[in-house]
Length: 114
Image 1 (cartoon, one colour):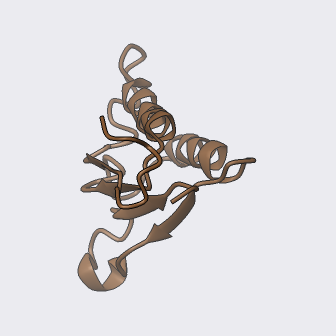
Image 2: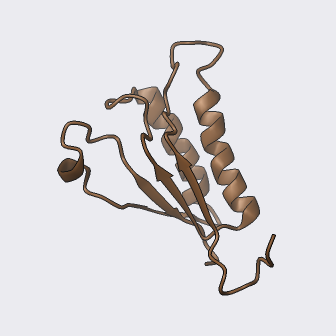
Image 3: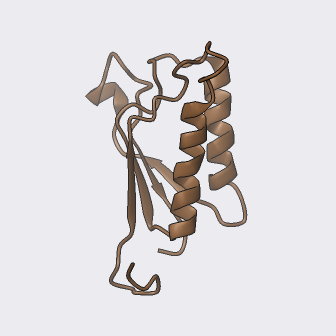
């Protein structure tokens, strides 16, 4: 792997189709997507990436349950609102691009130190 201090190097982590909330009612598999979502940010932090692109479906359904929303926000809060915050920005206007699926957000997350 290239030197992490190389100023000409752009490190990007791309993750797609997280489908948070999938198998929500299955006691065995309900945590799988959230474990993976947290791992995405852990890898990004360990590898000191400049940005994380979350493409595809963030949620499994277009109206996620309250539990799914709370768990998602807990993970984002952990990585976005701490001593080493990640900046997050929604890149597209979902009401224009996906009028029937407004909660299927495409996210771009910026890690500090870029």
